[in-house]
Image (cartoon, rainbow, N blue to C red; front, top):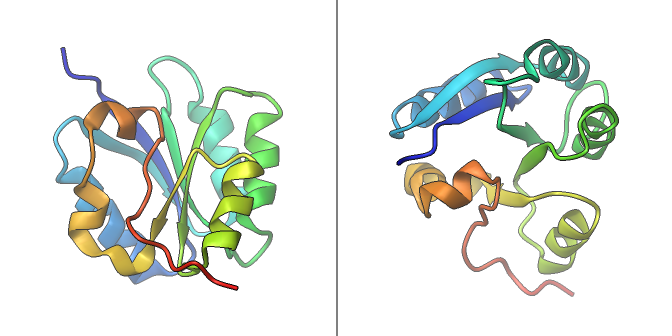
Length: 140
């Protein structure tokens, strides 16, 4: 039985948010429940929809106009510690990515990955929020 993935998307750039929304909707067994342009709106939507069959994965940009993605994680996980969070990032430095994963991200996706990067991977991993972009640079 395929697992159905329900997503909340938080991204401040409208054209990127709409594009990712369309890409995610095109992946079998994925539904975008809601999307938001700010962290505060995203957290409010999460609280509204976090129930069965609520949001399974939160996909959030790291850089938002009101607060960063890590604050989104803190506010989402306060009422729902098991919430799965996937970060969107333009930063591809391996040290930076490791720090994100160590601080609570379940995965990351480089914005440079393109459509195949979003759709790649095992659907079960996507449902659990365990998604990573390939080959980040080692950084310094």
